[in-house]
Image 1 (cartoon, rainbow, N blue to C red):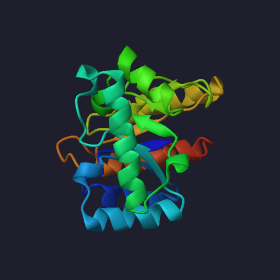
Image 2 (cartoon, one colour):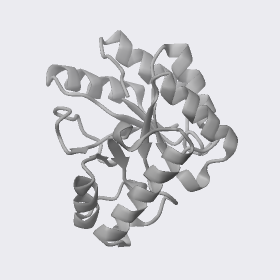
Image 3 (cartoon, one colour):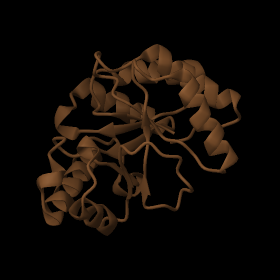
Image 4 (tube, helix red, strand yellow):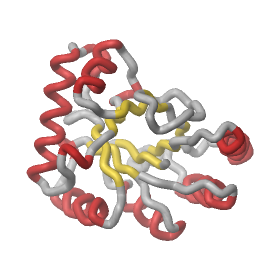
Length: 194
């Protein structure tokens, strides 16, 4: 799985890469950052099979919030996405924690909303029924050989890998490495899904 964070202008590059490679990404959306062009694009792409995940209404500092404040933020995000016609509450099953934070209050809030929680720990995930999933970020510094080793390990363990990108951060994002890793995963027999 590929999850792109923050729903900035980089979503257009991720969409371009995905269309070229023949896979669908999931966009971790920050409603407060969306303009009408990105809302319209996400609405169309979601209908075409791209995934939508929550990433905090304002990408707030959830690690400092109470569980009730986080639940309110989740509900506010869902309401926004529904009003924009991007996705309904029952179509959104993932929450990508802002800042990859993982506290008891965050876990309690996400679990109470019956969502899966995606954070930043780089792991091979055991199965899709797990409440918390980790991911590996693809950046300019990503070692393609190391990514291949992780994919091989996931395949051997019958697990899966979630890759993360910050496509709207030009200091971090590498379109070339993102495309190369997606192609590598497909070549190794992985099915990329959202």
